[in-house]
Image (cartoon, rainbow, N blue to C red; front, side):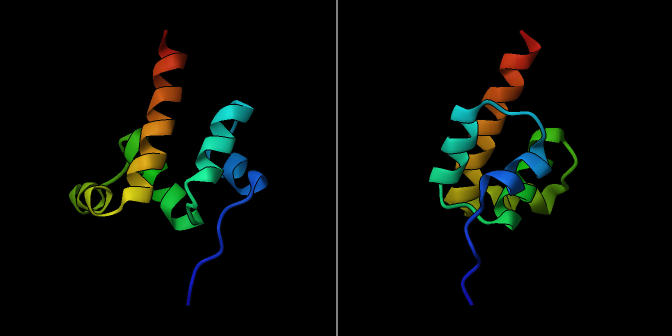
Length: 77
């Protein structure tokens, strides 16, 4: 059974405030809710070793991670 791709409301519910461009970039990855939650946990440092291994095995999670990590880096500036 194929998971349903995300929508803007789901992205904002998981990651909070995010620019429209970053939301669009996440949506364009074709990520699922599970992919987004995994990437968000990795960026927040809340994931375990198995989670980091999952990131490496999923291009979609890696793409979402990169988008979220860029947003976090922008906030720290």
